[in-house]
Length: 149
Image 1: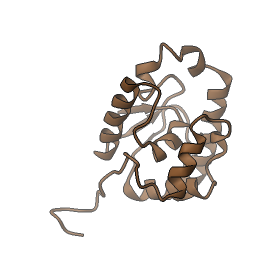
Image 2: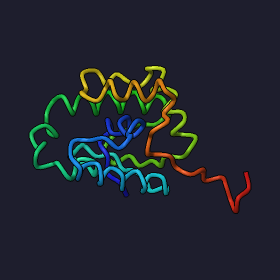
Image 3: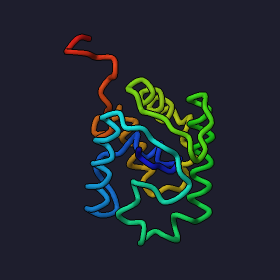
């Protein structure tokens, strides 16, 4: 199980291998690999698996009002898009179809309210406008078997 804050459901859409520290990037790459393999996500309101390598540095940040607000906005927007309630304890899996749905909504600005004021907003906007060519989260379709389409 991968534990994520709700706003990280948005961050993973445009993750391209950039981050706060080399340890952060290595960890995020491993999480991307696990997501690609179909590992489930559980939503948490605490510092999560993505921020684990820098949690001590961001302890105050991770419990701050701005992060809780980002979580609430992302949970509302992504939940409405997916037709489900996103709260701590919610579990979901990123299928190819679900990821495509989320990326289309992200590129259209439908689920971006949590991104306002984020330091990564420009990078994410650029990646989304370009059609997500460099993203590292790309789960294999669960419908393909033995090389059949």
